[in-house]
Image 1 (cartoon, rainbow, N blue to C red):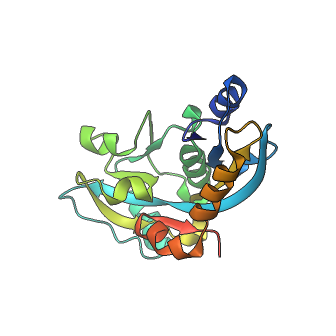
Image 2: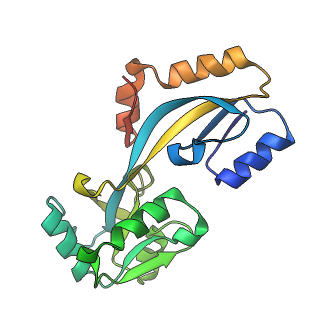
Amino acid sequence: MTLGGGSRAKVIDALKSGPADVVVLPTRDMADLPNVTGMTPLGRITVGVAVKAGAKVPDISTVEKFRAALLAAKGVAFTDPAAGTSAGQVIDAMLAAPEFKGVKRVPVQGLAVTALASGTADIALQMLPELAHDKTVALAGPVPSAYGAGVDFSAGIASVTSDALQAEAFLTYLADPKNAALWRQNGLEPLFH
C-alpha cells in the first residue's frame, strides 16, 4: 500500500494503524516523519495559471506580466491554505508578498477552478497537472519560476512494511531517469538524475 495525497497527520495515523509500504508526501512533510526511512526526492509540481475555457488567456510570460494579470483580475482563486494543502500554503505565501498587494484573493475549499465556474474569480492558481487536462479551463502556463511556486515531493519506505524489497524496487522504478520524460509529460519536474 502506498500512502500519500493527504495531510501529514492523516499519514501518521495510517502508519500507526497498520503496515504500509511507501509513503509519498511533500518533502517538507517528510522531514522527521516517524516510522519512515530513506527519503527519496521524486519531483516538483509547479503552480499553474488558468482561466475559464473561452476567456482571454493572459500573457504571464514575464514576472511583470504575471503580476499585472493578477492585479487586473476581478478575483484570483486558490485553495484555502487553512485546508492544510501544500499548494494552498505556497500560493498564499506568494500572494502575501508586497508586489501582490491589491490582488483580490479568493481562497476556496477544494480546487481553485471551481471559482472560475461560479464566476467568483477569473484566474485560478492550482497545481499544473490538475489544470493540464481540465477541459473547463484554458491554461496560461506555469507561474514564473522567479516565484518558486511549486511543491517538491519525496517518498520513503514505512518501517513496518509488508515487503521492504518490493517497496525499495517501487521507489527505484519511480526515480529511474528513464521515466523522466513520462514525469514531464504529466506536469512534474523530476528531482532525480
